[in-house]
Length: 356
Image 1 (cartoon, rainbow, N blue to C red):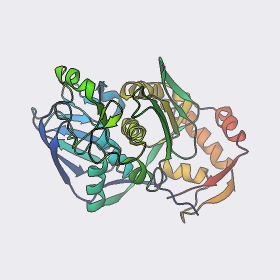
Image 2 (cartoon, rainbow, N blue to C red):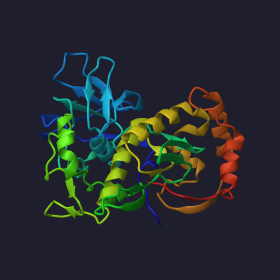
Image 3 (cartoon, rainbow, N blue to C red):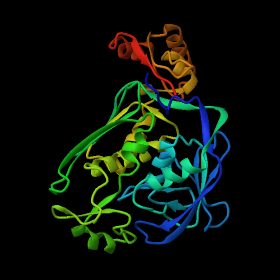
Image 4 (cartoon, one colour):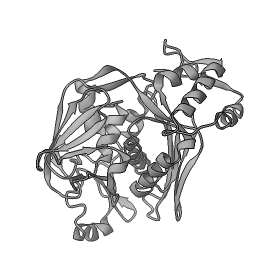
């Protein structure tokens, strides 16, 4: 019997109460205080800069807000107000299944904490969450959507279970080639990804700081690689911590879709820039995905309400319902029956039904 969590939970979720984090920005080096607050259903994730003029500080955590992808993901609103290095926090919120939150912050960059998502996840787990009485929706990938930049590429593939697979390849012998794949169900993010820290190279520090980057970096919030050795006395948290952190970054970037993405993200040498381009292409590729409620998706996939896993035949009545829904919502997708049919028929129309 296999149990899963996101995206199969059908209702939205927020925090049980507010959480405050205090730290420094990785790149600005500025001390910052940040409070993550519960929010009503359908709010999504919003940043609110409290140190700027009233009415100019609200920044949606969405793909269209991305303004800079050098070394981190920066979001910006129409007034030019921005918040940087959002990916670790967003990964932690998404990994805990948080759909709605308002993040009040008194500076231009999210505190780096220890360089991973673990500090965010720990406090969220400590204070708890509240399930809200409102439908949860997802983006269901139907056709491959890909992006390539020289030797880097990223693709979203159809998949019944959300999965991220990443490979990296550095000439540095301390890293080299690494690959890792994780299904984003149950405690996988918490156990396999959340603790992975950001990393940097000793020979690049001076150059980065001359460009106003990595001003808050230290051995307390990053893994430092010097030649073929790890400078941090405690060593690595995982043998392949580097590729796991890349997955953490990608997970945070993908959360800018604004809802769970049911699909397989597969990438080689990914970064924030290619992730941003991929999300832009996703929302331009209306015929390659469906906008569905998790409840409808569960029923279509034969997912039972008692959280069990069963082998079931494809529910063609629900299949037809999705096709009618797609035709009625052409502003969101333009799927056709043969799009679904080629995908499902190739799998014999049999699925392992999974639910939270």
